[in-house]
Length: 327
Length: 255
Image (cartoon, rainbow over all chains, first blue to last red; front, side):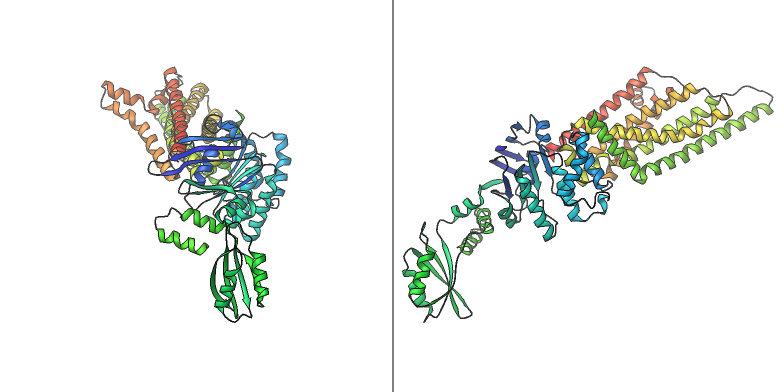
């Protein structure tokens, strides 16, 4: 549905986006992840035909953004970082204007406005002036504007910024709901958002593509081996347990962690490709100690993100520190 | 075509839902009324003088009232133009709504034409207010309506030409005030350019004076529709709109 190849956007002094390529299939939700100023908004602006690329090509629904921009624009719904609202208009009047601007059929527009208003939970503010709305409502009116003409592709630049926790959950639900019928790209710097809503992640940093994969693949790709944290009590001393754990089949390394409430804690890493949890549990119980807790330390997207985006950071110690923290 | 109308209606609504439209109309109505009153008062006192001196020469209402009023209105119009055009694009650029317009399936020239058309209609509505007082003449006398009609046609053309320049200037900035001041400066310049021929009649001075919008308005106020004036106004409108289109396009390359 979306194909980007070798996309580069240069400004007089900087390169905002540097040779990015990725593709998105129909019906997918893709999270665009990156620190502020990474080039997320620029990439989205190229996809929405707001600005042309300096080099490379981008295709939406089979149409080139440069040569067939009218066709692309018809098929795209875009919510920029600041929702494009006219404060002097009432919400219904605004949606009516947007619908006409998108070339919607007048007869279909009216029922569609009511439908979209219900979906975005703005049906109670329809006659109000946009200038009188709270930030959360404005964001949702912006979202309603983007989905109004039922576009194939939705491009949402930080759709949950400025919302309260309840509204964030509602918006995420709405986005997930929309995924079946629309292909969605959303940008964010809130990591859990991507973990919760997206199937695929595109991570960019300083204009360069760092990684593009599914959330689960990224996690397993970065961590080849299993890491486990466990809590043990009833043992004679730290060193005995340490030695006992290290002796378990498949264990690569054992790190002591500070004890809590008299329970000894360890972080154990297995050899690549080995499942060590069952063996560890058996080992602890067979030694006659009490096993309080045993859980796998999964790589959170946050750690992946930090690792990937700081890998080429200027200060190597900083990168090493992050690496250490992750391990 | 329908896209132009959609944009135009949105602009007109925003003029008339804010105090701008009413403020401008009231101000203009007041000023035009004052000019009309002054011109009529002069006309009457001159008429009485003439009669006292025993020379009952018929005086032309058009010559004495309609023309001065039209000329003054044309100059005051110059001051209103920036207030009408300054927000057209500057405000959209500042608030980010320009992203909505540009990413919608609407062509650049449709956006520009829609906005400019709204500005022209707004200016027309303001002119209509001044027509009210001039209309009073018909109650008490028989002025020739034809020069009046050409005069208003000229005012509208002159306005449309300056509005297209104002539209262009508004595309170049995010700041309404900058757009307003810039447009005002250009309007003022285009007005005073013809003064140059008062002290210099060389060829270059004539060329510069030719660019003055007021020079081209004068024939209209006399009831003369000269093709060269119409062509001047139409080409200025075209230039203004063309520059706006280029500027809107460059916004994307630079943005």
